[in-house]
Length: 248
Image 1 (spheres, rainbow, N blue to C red):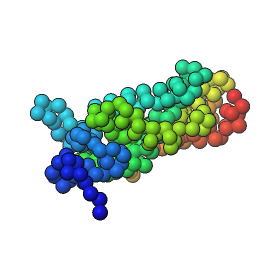
Image 2: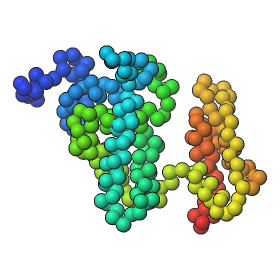
Image 3: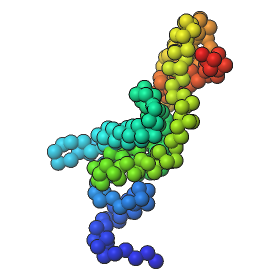
Image 4: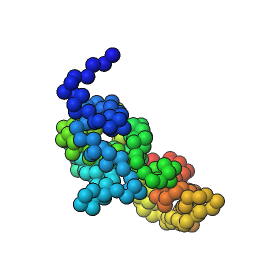
């Protein structure tokens, strides 16, 4: 049986739902949250259309902005110390790889943050990026609730320690489209991305893309956004020309 000090009991929320959230967050964050409302806001989707007494919207978007900045600062400071010989361009590139949208989405999924989200939209329709958005908003909430040191600790425990490997990151490709364009320009090849809306029989809008090099169609891609479709097709082009691209 776990005994909770009387002083701690006085600080616990009286509402059962809030108490449950408090203990879930405590287990997730490895520290006790002080202001539960900060975290509630971090998990509120704009579709709920809530506002405070001054008419300001209550949702995670501003916290996402704040959390993104704090995450970037912590990662930048870590890389600055970890790689003393790294140039500005190198450090910028490495930070971009660590805080890529794909990676942030994976982090949000690993922590199952979607379980906390309050939304008037079905989860299947909110989009993939909500996982990363909520992760950043959570960092923003931690900063406002407990300060920079706790935000830094959370980032080290959930991003840097388990996932940041400098050698592996150096070889990681963050944009296949950018890589293909750069290679084509170096080799003086003509390239074309033909992207168009392609709804088909899907309830959600899709986009398709065809990539041609020197007039020959090389690959196709289809996804729920232009960027995803272009990345999908570009990845296929990369594997089709991998030996040539690797050779420069």
